[in-house]
Amino acid sequence: MNYETFEKALEVLDIVTRVTQAELKERYMKLSKIYHPDMPQGDAKKFKEINEAYKLVKEYMQNYRFSLDEDEFYAQNPFSRKSKDWFYNF
Image (cartoon, rainbow, N blue to C red; front, side, top):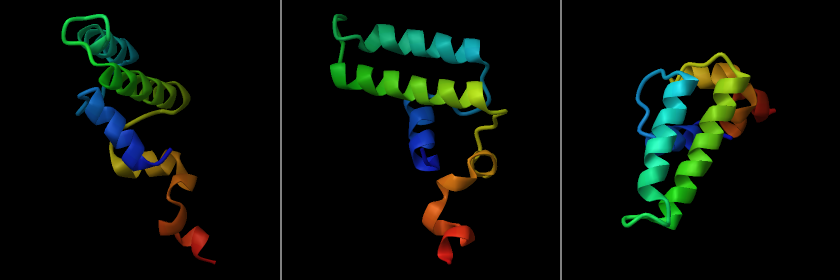
């Protein structure tokens, strides 16, 4: 996972600030009900995107103390930077 992937997941779930796990689940449930393929305006591709985003953000929230800004993300995921990080330039 890199920050761009994480940021995209936040965008899909329409998260712009800190949320609790309960709020995240509530937002996921609301979006999944709208885009479920069995619903009138359902979209299988969007539904899959919402599921993947939810799994990614949920995993991040369960495994880390979290903040949703880029500096905090890289502080908690130091090996995500790869080629941009000085460590990988040797």
